[in-house]
Image (spheres, rainbow, N blue to C red):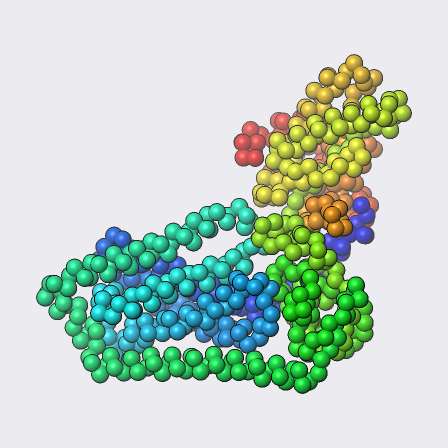
Length: 586
């Protein structure tokens, strides 16, 4: 595989600070604010869970909780996050034209917009009551108000469930494309069920304890006085303020919905445009829709893993009509395109971000019928992502001569026994056999572990390959004039992994400089008369001593500078280098 043909090896090198800044969009801001709010929610729910111990534990916990969240600058960060996240939620109601998933995305939006209406009475009574009238409300007073007004109890139970579900859906949208999501998902699910359950039980137990104390005049005098509950005029003022805020919020939502209707009328009057797909299909849509939204509205299959959030590039298209009249890419779109190495090609755009104002023709670069292009959380690696992997190329020596002296079936039998021995060693070491190329094999390490473990796994696999081939040679000694020999090249680095191929002929594999270099190193084992060549990158990351193996600089085709490598004449010596502690960690 030639590095010059590999897009992963030609990704543009943007300054880290510039690349980071260009990658920030409204969704990233909303995510950060949402994480702040979810952290607050988690802290508050854990405080509620203390009610399962006692009301005193609840009171002690709320002092710590409030002391942290009301401190400066935490309070500034929190209230800024509340304001920004809420404003962006309102903007999402206006801006979103089409939903990628018919149920979960609208549900997420509805849940988020319902939270202010459900929580406003509680916020006004507790926070504004303290700020405006110096009313010192805490759990006993809140529970007492629930006892005297049962509907408040059910509204708070509802807001607990709604806010938690909204936050969990947001976390799911964020984490589902992460490499580690499948590994941690069971634990996250357990926490997502356990935490609100304990919080609701804590609230229930605290409320029961307050009900039991209502018969005590001393407790009532200490907890139900005007300092704790406020005077009648103060409570009336807070109730009126709650009503005004609810009316104002409802009016705001009505204005946004009306604005959506006005926008639709304006867009239709502004004119319609034609979108022409690569298969000749043509749809007519109003200006203002993104290409992805237009596809979804007209039920045209269009790959989009992240649901139109500009977090992946699976919806990207190549414009085949005039590109001069297209709007310029946003900073977020430009960032994503530069990450995949197409930033210099103005004809490649993200369908979720491009909102054409004139007729446009294009072809989809990810076939929508390909399952992996439309998959999401279940197999995120198969849709294409960048990650660190260790690549190992193993090749059988002398297979051509072997084939000349044997029947085809016998040759295939021996090659399969060789690949079987190699694959067993790879799997036993924690790697994954990936591609079989003739009598050679590409194996990948690091799909489910950190780089150091991946490097050690690869070295351990090379040792096991030598042992397995020795055993195979003994088993086939009567049939082989010469023992089977092999060459191994190992290198690690950032690669792109995903399904490569056409329709039903897809192969999960890796593309990148690390793959190319591993193949080159395997070829060099012939000229350097050794069994294994590993790069300095793998040796250092695995933690091998600097003088453990002979090293030299070699010229790698496709690279300007020579590369420092370690050569291993007999792969079995790796058993003394990959220590028992290293192996036990595999």
